[in-house]
Image (cartoon, rainbow, N blue to C red; front, side):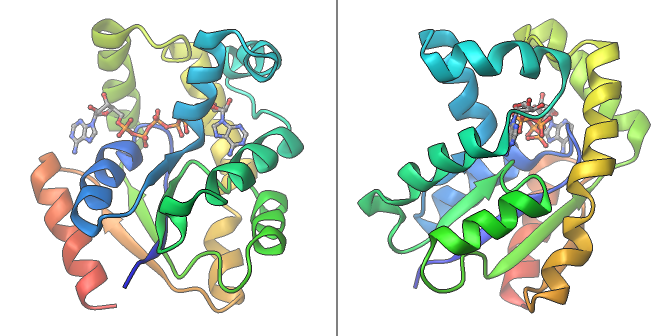
Length: 189
Ligand code: AP5
């Protein structure tokens, strides 16, 4: 049976890394709004042109643009039996919009990855050197962390209050050790 899982956590917590591994293990698509938006920027689409400057500043792209992009992605056949969402919903408005656009429970379980802030910043500055992602500079990283606290953290209360369980997973340690915690958390849920 497919699963509908949301990975939540601050920038650098390892959402993309863990979602890639779990999607492979569960056989469901990994849907990352950050990846989709970076592709749109690279391809120079209208969406990419509008999103690029906001992303480079560490601010959120407007809800209606992201919601439409995700709704289209979820309508494809490979998402019919489950999906792993990474980076979306990013605020309560997006969570409500997702619930309205999907029949049944859009999210069955939330996995919250936690990592100390110093380690988050270290990981993203390291990636800046390795990959050169536009928003991995110190000022933008601080802004992304602020936006996470003000916009995204409220989802940590929102989902349980709407009957969706949330499991907190220590995101510190080797990637494979964190993944073992993810698998264990889902097995015991
Ligand atoms: P997005 O791409 O979602 O970025 P983010 O949330 O800031 O997340 P990151 O990709 O930086 O971190 P992650 O938690 O996925 O960790 P990762 O596995 O990559 O969003 C970017 C921007 O797009 C936003 O700022 C916004 O502008 C826009 N956007 C996206 N979604 C939106 C939405 N829904 N609404 C509006 N705007 C939206 O790992 C990070 C690094 O750490 C990597 O180098 C990795 O190799 C390393 N790492 C991973 N795990 C470990 C480990 N266990 N130990 C050591 N290093 C590790």
